[in-house]
Image 1 (cartoon, rainbow over the protein chains, first blue to last red):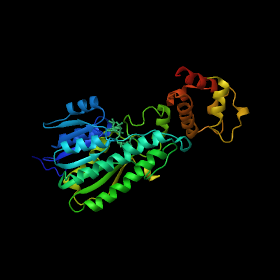
Image 2: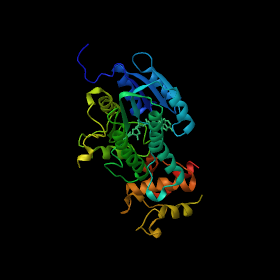
Image 3: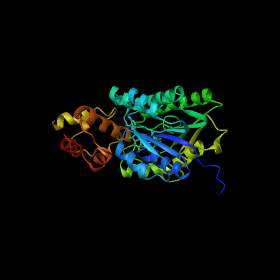
Image 4: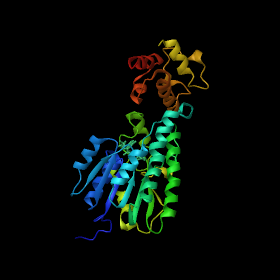
Length: 247
Length: 76
Ligand SMILES: NC(=O)c1ccc[n+]([C@@H]2O[C@H](COP(=O)([O-])OP(=O)(O)OC[C@H]3O[C@@H](n4cnc5c(N)ncnc54)[C@H](O)[C@@H]3O)[C@@H](O)[C@H]2O)c1
């Protein structure tokens, strides 16, 4: 076999939000590099589709609403031991501050912030991580490095998650590592139809690389953090944004 | 839902544009105060007040306040 420091051969990896976008692309790349995947999401049809796109054998999926404490308990009880965990499920709803309401804020915080915290807590408590395991959280540049009109709820949810990542890195060392990827705008269904094509074209001009990211751009950064190539990297937040934060 | 009521709610999204300047035939995207934040506010207002989900293309395809009113009404 050719030299490949990024191989994931022999690793079992859990990916949340695996039914589409960045989660699907990450699962596909991990499988290509030899990992065995456990996919989870609330969207079963999307999980089926991701599963059928994976190379290799031994992959499985589990449907779960990560905002339910019971669902988290069941999911964790059924999981094999893990060498990798990609906490990636997330939602947004662009809303100006004066329109923030309890329903939207609680939904965004529960999926983007509380679910990753509770899931990590349970994985640790139930000793699901093999020594040398790598945890990767999909955070964002939004909230952590940039602000945008309408992004307060999402930004607050991701800012809190970023702080959590650093704390897990500290408590987890030297046994496990914990990092984040922080993407700029990526072509997925996340933002739904909140922005028109015209707005997007204009916004893309604010990216030095003159395009939005593709899910695979982020997936390959996650692969690096999951692989032993990054074994001395922990508590890091890896910006993948086509240069957006250079301004 | 009547247009007078809609214009009142639309006008609330502005801080410096008096409601007298906001008649049905006004081309709202040409207003000095119009911005992406106000566009998001109008989307949130339609959601909160009328339970209607406007998308970016609804705003893009509307020229006048009346067009926007019609877009909301068609989704009621
Ligand atoms: N697309 C971007 O521009 C962008 C930029 C920065 C960060 N991110 C982050 O990347 C991550 C992945 O998003 P994406 O862009 O691939 O969007 P996406 O909508 O394609 O994927 C998000 C996934 O999360 C799942 N999900 C939502 N609620 C859930 C719940 N309660 N339980 C289980 N699963 C749930 C969805 O079903 C979906 O498959 C998110 O955390 C997002 O915040 C995205």
